[in-house]
Amino acid sequence: MRVLLVGFSGLLMGLATAPFSKFYFAWVSLVPLWTFIISEKTKYISHRDIKSEKSRLKSKTKISERILGAIAWGFSYHGFSLFWITSLHPVTWIGISWISSLIITISCWLLVTCWGIILVLVWSFLMLWYNINYIQKINCKKTKKKSLKDTEVLTSSLTQSFRRIVFGVAIWCLLEMIWNQSPLWWTSLSYTQSPDNLAILQLTKLSGHSTVTALIIAINGLISESILVIDKNKKQFLFLISLSVIIISSSHLYGLFLYNHRVLDFNDKKIKIGIIQGNIPNTIKLNHEGKIRALKNYSNGYEILANKKVDLIITPEVALPFNIQYILRNSLLHKKVIEHRVPIILGALGGKKAGYTNSLFTIVENGKILSRFDKVKLVPLGEYIPLENILGKLVYSLSPLENHLIVGENKQIFDTSVGQAIIGICYESAFSEYFRYQTSLGGEYIITASNNAHFTQIMSAQHHSQDVIRAIETDRWMAKATNTGYSAIINPNGDSLWISKMNTYDIHKGVIYARNTLTLYVKMGDWLTITLNLIAITPLLKDFLVAIKV
Image (cartoon, rainbow, N blue to C red; front, side, top):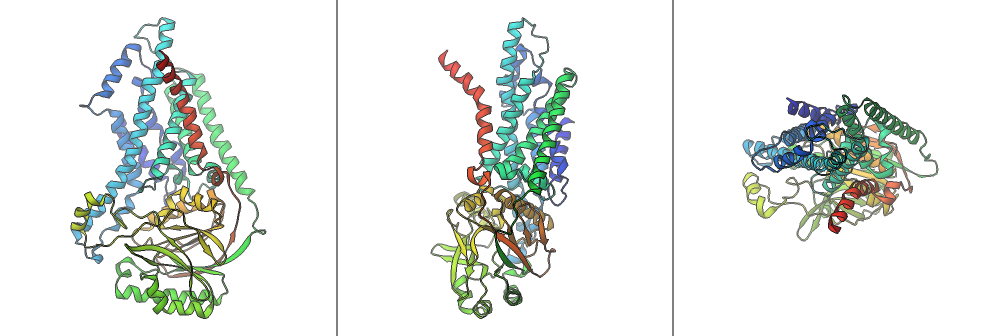
């Protein structure tokens, strides 16, 4: 029954994500899992029981209820949050059979869900290990000193509760940092607060998304630890609950202060930006009809925006599904660029010796390419095959697609006629370090380009929530162009000053500003996670050194 409750709380965490945006659920949704892991058997334990508990934990023949609880929570949260992946089915329009499409879609969803479950499992196991092997070791020493009987229940001290909380926060943030370096990442706890809780998101300027993740874990930990002592130590219960209220209140108030005291933009360079949302359905995007419509929609949209005297026009990811050289030689759009002399950032395919890239190109007044940016974070299975030597035969047996994209270089600078841009193409919006690095190299504003036509509105809403966090933590204006929505203009506070409708052909003229401010996060990276982990491991390191001397 408790496993079901833990699983349900994971579902509540999923409901905190966009477009449901019940962000307040995130501040309590980890409590059932925390209290389940640090249960009566592991928190209040006798000296004799410690040994048997360790033996039970090491048993390879039985899965503990706590691990099942972690799996249930992870599946509920990550599975629900990422269920939009299944809307990819059917993809019969690219020549895949209906049943193959179903198998591929479900497999992709299960793969990314399991990757999230592993994070929760590792965190839960380390929390359980820490509580049994370190916290209870302290209790054993106290028991011997006080000559208590083995059958007497030991009371957890406030210090031990704080140690568990710091350890839990540090490990979760560390795991998110590691997962953020992997090819698969989307569901940081921080994105449960976006785009609606802009006050707390201002704190990402301090140490990136981990600042919000740390606060969410800390509040859940304080509430959990207070529940665990409610019947045994009323003073400690009231102290922990009061502390959680103080921290969450002060964090939001400080975030609100930052939100209301942002540096004004009148000293920054004004850029009149044009955005084209082509609205080419994926079912026709690669056939003759889709290509003709794309050429027409983007050529007409360019001309309309050029006549409105914008400084720069942006298009979505692979707006024109052609090789860039073909576009420069044959397209009407290229001729209109030369005619109207307004630069455009165009999504197209870039050629390389080993294949092609998913790229953005800045085409300037004379019709030549000023800069190129190749997508770095490719979508596994969608744009390349991970572990191709192992999975290649299986994927090729299900899909007729033979080509896959080439990964772009990490250190790319994208210059435009109106300053250096920070670029994110589609899936890259989930990777905060990727944007931080470009900002540190001198990026003045953010341009993101996406397709989004593969999936439902839920995915587009979550994608927008990722972009909101990237704009806030780098303190940059953002203009985003998507194929089917949501295209938007976002200011450094995370406000969406304009957002398109879904599945419509849209043309918009707006204003963004080029900035050169540097947030603490841009300067120092995710220093909070490193600091928390140093604090968490210090007692463990001390014990280890003592053990070596002995």
